[in-house]
Image (cartoon, rainbow, N blue to C red; front, side, top):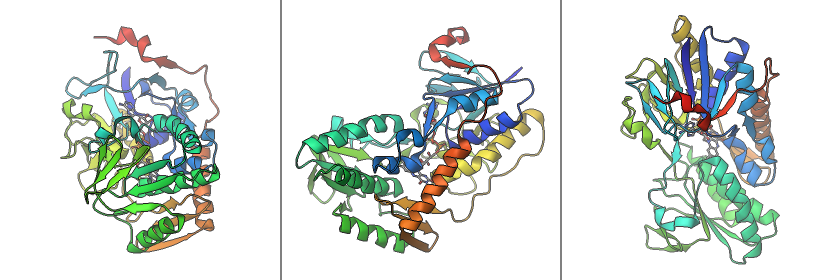
Length: 387
Ligand SMILES: Cc1cc2nc3c(=O)[nH]c(=O)nc-3n(C[C@H](O)[C@H](O)[C@H](O)COP(=O)(O)OP(=O)(O)OC[C@H]3O[C@@H](n4cnc5c(N)ncnc54)[C@H](O)[C@@H]3O)c2cc1C
């Protein structure tokens, strides 16, 4: 019996679970090791904050997917990985050996500049912690006149979060102020100037103040690189991705930023029995943005290549589309479309995004389980796995 470990219940592994539900692997024990039973779909998170969705409409329950795929679900995060010894470590010290490993653990939020803001700071990841904290923010903003929320991060996520927060505050009848701090080199890097202009115009119309400056956390909010103090009751950090630290000890080939280096087949450059997809990896042949689009689209290729490694067959490359479509929600039922040099906006763009997002959730929702009760274990049940 060979052992395949799927580490992380991320977007790419959804396709792997679906493929396994259609056709199981022969004589392979498959495990999914991930901390939460739910995958929160980030594309709908701003819509949930803005009040367009219930939370249960924005997540995918991994349990029935694992059950239908005949995959054991272990609810624990990886704490470490030793690619030479072919094993992963869990926080309780348990070690699990593998023949084949697939990493789809996503990325972390880089809050290194904001640490001094301490309890005011709310990183966007893990999304499950963010979701719990957001409802408290709305509650505080309702009770506290002059409440100020700062969103740090000038990428699409930061922009969407600022718009969504502002819309939520209005819906709840608060007068809370939202500041967006684009702390990177530019606002919406990689998007066409027309998209940036649309966002700037809408921010101004809504009264969201845009600051184009690097920000550092302070005890009462933020200090901007231009010397301006920006007091904030809470600071949402959407400051870009950072690779998980435990990868540095993994012995896998990593790029300069600490991400797992993979080839076009999503296979590790250094270890042929390790694959990685989504935010956690960097392709050696092409520079890809860390976005859900690539995690989702690499999924079927990853599923195929894992099977080919175990059962034989040709490997397939993941060929990213030259120009992915981004739909940026702007608070109310309105969104901006960005596709290469082309852009558009309106309620119809929001309905288009809503259709795509709901279809994604429907497609990856629970299939009809074909087997007994879910095989689900907490990490403490794995004492026998100690080596
Ligand atoms: C607010 C927001 C909006 C966004 N909107 C879009 C959008 O509209 N379009 C787009 O393309 N991208 C969007 N993104 C980016 C997108 O969320 C990520 O690029 C995408 O989630 C990456 O997918 P992934 O599978 O690599 O990781 P994730 O989706 O983050 O999944 C990682 C999984 O691994 C688990 N995990 C974490 N740590 C461990 C560990 N140590 N061990 C085991 N498991 C672990 C997590 O619980 C999770 O299940 C948005 C991001 C944010 C924050």
